[in-house]
Image 1 (cartoon, rainbow, N blue to C red):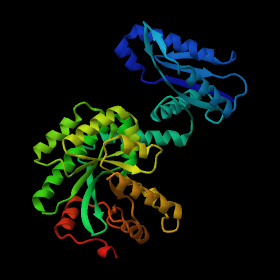
Image 2: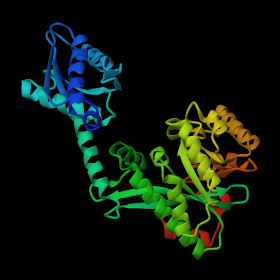
Image 3: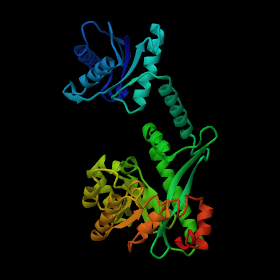
Image 4: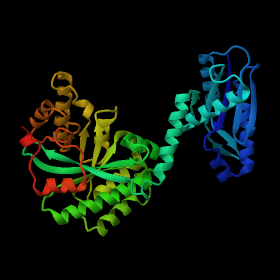
Length: 403
């Protein structure tokens, strides 16, 4: 088997734009030498144009050999380059096409290696991908979703649903979580995880989260005017929003424009978002708390750093992930884990909300704790704003006084 590989340097344009084309040309020469140094004498390396390189292996190469060669090529660029006394870091994405499974002609192999390379790049870069028709179709669909998402706000395809959060001891309403939804004419209802993933990769996440913040606050003010019920509003944030230097000022301005007190607002962050930049995150979250908001860690219990986070960050509470209560009726280990989290929250004077309550058994377990709060499809699915307003106005515990 012969392998054809295409390599494309990740974000090389940024280097040309910031350091100039002369530095870019020097970097390409150094990259070429590094790549050549890890190839076998019988393999062929060629620069195909711009920041793209091609490799053709000679002799028999199976999938495992091709993967190893690709890893070596990627690893060869791990050490910083030095140009004009400046350190430059660069990574590469590699697409691999194997003869004859991915093509029997040079043009077919090059085309399919190119498609695989773009799949690798859309996975975040600095990795390799073998060509497969399924992988390419998945990538092209993702690109169509990305292009459609760019117009989603303008075309009013994005909307919010709201899922109630209950005080389970007295069946009162604690708050409501604003949840992003998207209904597209071609893709239908797209999962929130896919929306966020595409938005993160395409750089649209800040624009979308800003829209969510504005829309949720606008709706919250409408509820305050139309109902007498007091409850909190939970809004999910992205780490990229918090990294923006003017974000806290933006929150403050919006709340002032809508004449909303910040104290009923809860901003939710996942552990993954927090660990990206712990130092800066601590500063921004402290600023949010100073102006009156609360911070919750979402999906608590799914990572390795959860407890250290609530020790080191100015959080007001956390939400126990749905995975922690699955099968809790039969699983003593799960029961003990959740019990310990309730004790932890009580000792640290933190609010705790259990997510994803879907059965009577899960509900009974959470209700057994004096400060238990919960949300999930067993209590209420996410509903439209007008439906939530009806729920608030004629507030009746659901389902049927929690049975």
